[in-house]
Image 1 (cartoon, one colour):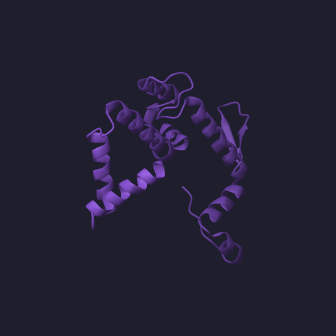
Image 2 (image 1 turned 90 degrees about the vertical axis):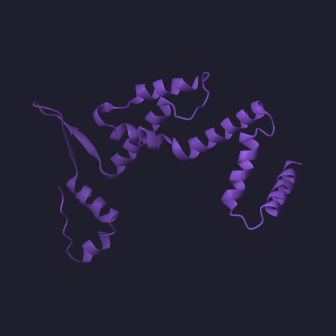
Image 3 (image 1 turned 180 degrees about the horizontal axis):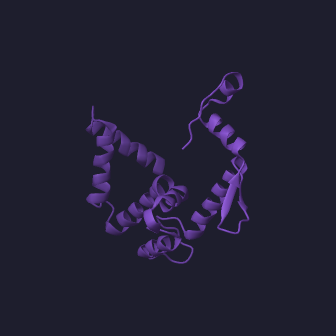
Length: 165
């Protein structure tokens, strides 16, 4: 039934907006449904929230993007505690999913990233009296850089110059 209703709406929109760009048709249809509240304000709000949550979770607020933002924030501008504070704005019930991923989801993403990094270029803590030191296998780093820039085959046959800073 819903499929037939959807097809009928699309047919009417196509006839009424003949030779109109698809984005303009969609914008007009959304304006009628959401701005004019075609099905009432409660239903409109519920559907709009559901649709926007799905889009935001799949396209914008992905855990790896939030983790990257945390890592790149200057002077600890945002951290996992700050993320939980921002999630409180949504007034979520326990175990309810909101726009932002939970602290534990971002932590799992960080662990997966760390595990992947350890597979590609293992880094080990080196005991030292002065301060913390970490060491890595320089040969694996160079091989990874060559592969990342598609120079690994050329490096086997010819010389390749790397400049690291």
